[in-house]
Image (cartoon, rainbow, N blue to C red; front, side, top):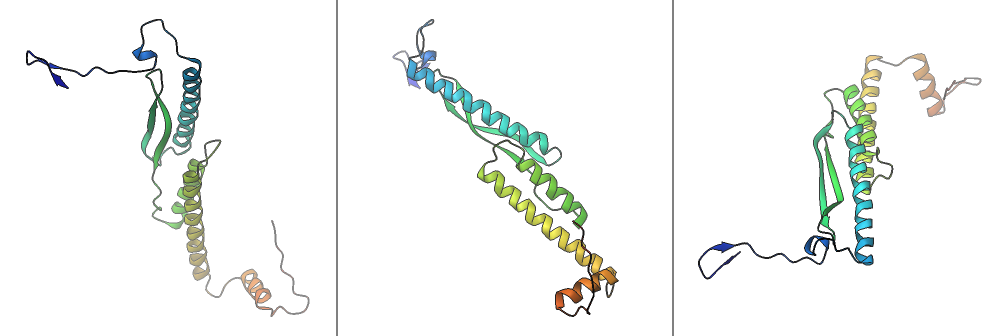
Length: 172
C-alpha cells in the first residue's frame, strides 16, 4: 500500500503479463496459451484424483480436498496439487480394523494413477490388515486350545513329523 500526497491510502497497482492485465480483447501469446493449456489439463487431473479419494473413502474422510494452486499467465489459479485427509486409525476390534484397513487401501488406490504418498498409505493399510489378521488368528487359536485336527496336521507337516501316508488338503 502507498499513501498519496493528500494522505489517502491507495492500493498498489498490480501488473500482469497475462491476459488479466492486458487490455480487453487482447489474446495470450502462443507460448502463454500452451502454458494455460497445460495448467488446465493438470487442474482437471488433480481435481479428478482427489475426487476419486473422496468417493472411495466415504466415512473415512477427515477433511475434503485442499489444493495447491499456480497462477497462469491469464491471471487464473489452477490446481497443481492436492490432498484429502483420511482417518487411518485402527478399529476397536481386529475385525473392525481389518474392514477399515481394506477401505483405507481402496481409498488410497482409488485414483487411476496413485501417487507415491497414495501407495504409502495403501502399504500402511496393508500392514494394519496383516496385524488384524494375526490378532484374529491368535484369538481363534487360543479359543481352540490344542487346536483342531486340521491345525495339528498342518503343524505336524511343518515340523516334519507327519506319519507315512499323511495327507494335508489345501484349497485355493
